[in-house]
View (cartoon, rainbow, N blue to C red):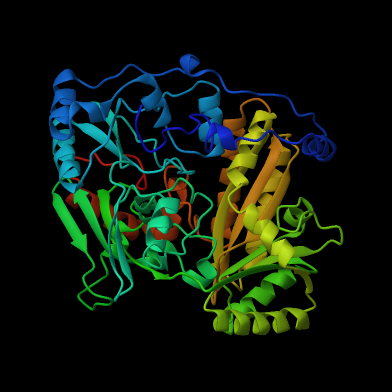
Length: 529
């Protein structure tokens, strides 16, 4: 078995060595808060996973092997299971229960752009759907292509396309292959004195191509911007040929067509190269924590920072519930209120001056300093969320997230509306649960809201969550928020896409799809309803 997820758990996040059991104290706390006891719910063995029969015809398989070599076409059980769906909680619950009915018929690993082009030609000829696969970290159904009307489904794994192609130090640009993971990219850039500064929670396993295809946003977006703001050029392999975009730092040559590729989720083509704006390695890195009295008031402070151009590199505000649960940095809050994590990364002079200005504003707003240790604690655990989720699943609990963003004027109502909709939907399902939220992406005009829900796994947890999330998404639309700030559309957000971009917007996207993918083989059923 070879691919982007080699060595990782097929039923969870990360490697077996990184897996940690849920502490006894947390189990006890969950029993007290939710009124139910934790129960061990291990995944089934790989041999017990239910897989559909391989539909790939021998002549189609031979044609694929002729393009990329027989060693890079895999249809064994483990390869297919590892490329089945993404890493949302519902994806994992189905896998852990032995359901891999959405598994691809085969996994292929091209080594370069030309091999991707040739692969797409073969797949168009044999009516094979193609699912571009980077780190496999989608949480919105972005890797479960519709198989109606096709002769098979192929996962196109970009793991072999994993180079830092080049660095233009004079222009502060880097060109990267799509299969390069976050840690490998930053390590390679560091040898040239640069960093990207894009650190989503999926950073350990997500890839450059995935960042682009989903319009990813990282934890340092307050200071460094979203991933799409870092992209200056992009190359796409499509069934009708190569499409390269971005030849200057700015252009007035019509609409910016890069925006059609960013966020396209593999439905328009396979991203085979990305040119990125990079920055020098920071001279200093300093993180600290603050406590504020309440979430609404603290959010107003973030608004002031953003609108006065005083944002730090990282700004992460947990609401009262998330803070009390100990997920806001600095451990559980014994004094109540909300925890705010602030980080400064950059030139030493800038960091010191910005820290002084932000600190003065926070103290004026009544914030209490929690010190460097609080920031350091958050840094140590910044990527631990998926591991905690898996430990909760092992203990018979359900933990999932959803996110949105809205303008500052709408944010208090959006926060309350979504929180209350989730709570009401859980009550309607007769499921006790905890709803938490944080803000981690801040702009002069608004901010994101990232909700976490923890509840027991009762019967039919996937169907129950579907109804809860539908209620939450209706509240998002009614409250004026976006259906997704950084998780992408996939299949889960499709029913509400028209509410956000309108029927004309859908028609524009369909027209682009028809032009670039006339046979409809690229990630069918994803992004577009």
